[in-house]
Length: 444
Ligand code: SF4
Image 1 (tube, rainbow, N blue to C red):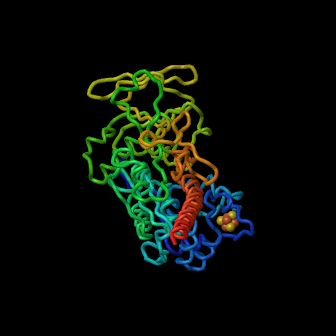
Image 2 (image 1 turned 60 degrees about the horizontal axis):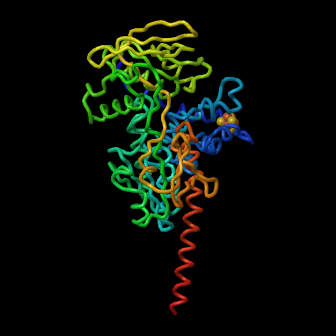
Image 3 (image 1 turned 180 degrees about the horizontal axis):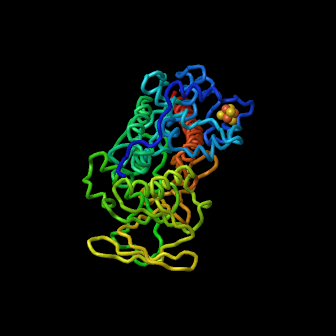
């Protein structure tokens, strides 16, 4: 298999309207309760059922900055769809697919044109353009703030662009969502790394009222397995990023390293592990086995992702841990030793991909005074104003604070941080105005 085409098909217009017409418009909609960002699901589904696509989009836009992304990669089975009353009969409304339809249809038909408010309420810097950074930028731009985003990569999107494979989230969809945020007046500075090209203090000196750190968790975790340092062992986020760069034409196929007949073992069973396994198959690996120390019911990957991986030929070993990695020649591995409930076996593999989580990189914190972190390096934040770090005016959200676990949870957290930033900047500007008024009275 080497097909990176998007796996799930979009609805046609009549199919979408028919599906929307199944909605019962419950008085107390449990679907909305199940949505981390409280999307007004029955309202926009109602508009869609009547064929009012532009209205449906406006209602979605009021709660989400990334509907085409959420429609594709959210864990609907555990959220809106899992909570839909019709799910009891196994016939929940396909809310994710409908959201994707509305977002794609709106973009193709160029239906909704948002009025941008004057952006004079404050100047905001956002470091990192993953789901949290984009959400903050979109929310604040819509509320009258001028927002500038600083991104270390050559393209914005963070994990959406470099961490989620093309067959699940096409890059064109991410680019489209980013364009919408640009159209709100948000400026992007690319290939600029905080802590290297500029510091938090530089940004304050340039006049930013508040700064948001949405830099995610770029430092992969390792397990203490003998042989783990061999170059045949690679991190899943490294591998997925390489594949993305290759698909964008920025690196050579051979720099991806994994693929072409390799036997691959993936350690871990979260969504990143499944993404890495399915991507390894698409890059031409002959055999891919996911090794996980717990059971299928305890994996953090979504069931739908797991089912698709099984259908594509990924193998799974449960209650199993890799206890030794044996290196071979040519940067390849020879074998791994796997312990399954006390019994050990050797398995021939060429590559191991690690997907056991990641921790925040410390570049910003180490170049900035006053931002406290916990013992694992996660940034500490306050409840009021929500999301502010121990440094005044510096806010954090998303993975870097260890709160969210998925794209939509990063967005949910970022929406609360955006409210905290608004409170802070409004109060700061008011104080500055009062001080300036007082000085001018004294000078009269
Ligand atoms: Fe419609 Fe299901 Fe939500 Fe009820 S719970 S409003 S049926 S989507």
